[in-house]
Image 1 (cartoon, helix red, strand yellow):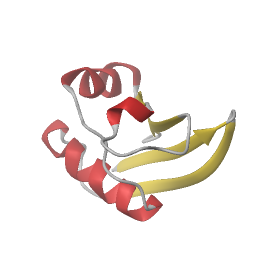
Image 2: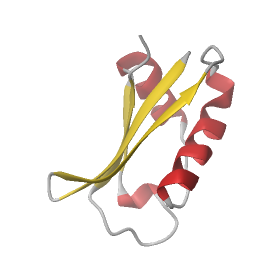
Image 3: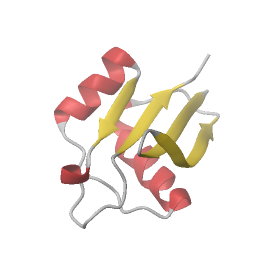
Image 4: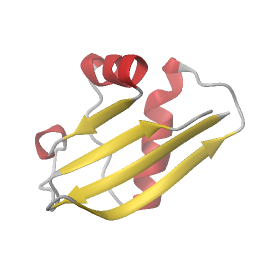
Length: 86
């Protein structure tokens, strides 16, 4: 089972959050799909997903996306994904 806690942070506070759940086993190849679904729920554009983002998520169970990871201007400090699967 996959559980990813997504948080939009501005001025050290959570301004939006969403917990994505999927009954399937985590698959690295589907990380972009998970990210797109999460962003749709939070009404955010999907950031650019680099190999370094995937590596951080796999190794540290979290990844930060900063405004420069988005193609459009952002009104927050960063977007954080945390793997909270048990």
